[in-house]
Length: 261
Length: 338
Image (cartoon, rainbow over all chains, first blue to last red):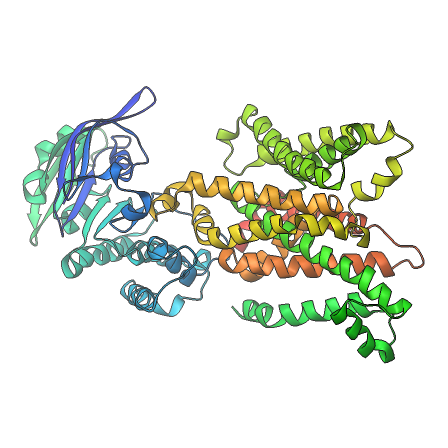
């Protein structure tokens, strides 16, 4: 299990995480939700060790994450940054192969087992016929699936995704999150994803962490955390939240001036 | 992929053909078997065999060394600086090596071995000055490493200016160095190759071992670190190997400009950005380019022999313009390409 205990972190004088304590459940999809600049990405960066933690602990199976070496950590946690760019002319097959770096020896390459895994991964994301295709020539939705494939090829139990459905249209947003959800259900992966859309969150996430101004307002199962009261507290914004077809739906309330009579 | 397959199948045969032309052009076919014998036994029994053994073979070896090491270093520097204009000649490495070698020879009267050491030290100092100037100019806000290239140009100009001043101040001995300072593949430099070849071999081995982590760094340092790369260590090792490798090439035959700049741009569209395949491709292509440049320098304007460095500068100048146009002046064209 991945856990943060009273984590504080700052970019210079700017405090971005204040006393954040969250337990991320194994085999579940946890959505990290909050307004822009509330520290969602910073939380993932702190877990990965890209943002120095000034106080508190980050534990993976009871072991302090910063004490785990880069190579070893790469076999336990995979991370997809918010804006990924791929070097020109790189093919999808090469991208996937690079992801297994932490398992290769100094001069060795992928083993037979790795190659089988890469095949499975491409099949899982539905790009099995695209291995020799340059990543930068894939469509937006395909490219996002390519990044997910790179993360999967790292073959870790924990996966951190920073806004994995940004810049995608509705159809691809659902397709990507369905794929991610499937990973938790069928393969027992622990996924932590930064999401913006509350309706996507309630549709796919098992657990939610609500952040506001660097502090964790509340966390827990979707049904208990996503309430009109909590959402208003976090976003300063009134919503109606009601169950529909077995999941919660968030409907923002329009302000009086913009409401159509 | 087809372009890639074509390259993989044709690169080595092409290298072999260029090498044969380089070695045997002008030598009559009838004497070829005997010439081969001379090569294998290191004994010359005729004028032609002596030319082959003591002029062309050394030139070919130097061309192979300079071409492979400088081109691979250029590819690594372009990857690390994330700038298509990065290369030993644009980042102060070549100018630094030239300055220290000339200064050492003219002021302190050092011998060939220490000239080589001076060139290596100069390469490192040239590169570090380039980094220092770009830090002062604010490299932090420069994702594409442009200030690094501009500082490189600045440092190169300064160092080249001092080198020229030193040469001008010593009319008696400057002619010894004029040939070297413009960069020349010359059989006379084979003893320098004998001294310094291992440095280039070490750099190339470093590149091969670091090829995967270096490719991952292309995705950004956070993505690379999350995949298990020790980014600061790998970057430093690679910079060091690239600078020393390129410096050793300068120590052998002077700054052959632009091999490190243009060869990566020939290789990348064909083999891609993955250093695992691009480094060997750069080594082969660099060798071919240097052999061709030397062949051209030797044969084009007979009986005059051109300076290889000048031929490469001419070629490089043209490619430089194409790169600037493609990568900097027409972002839309570039956007359509990716």
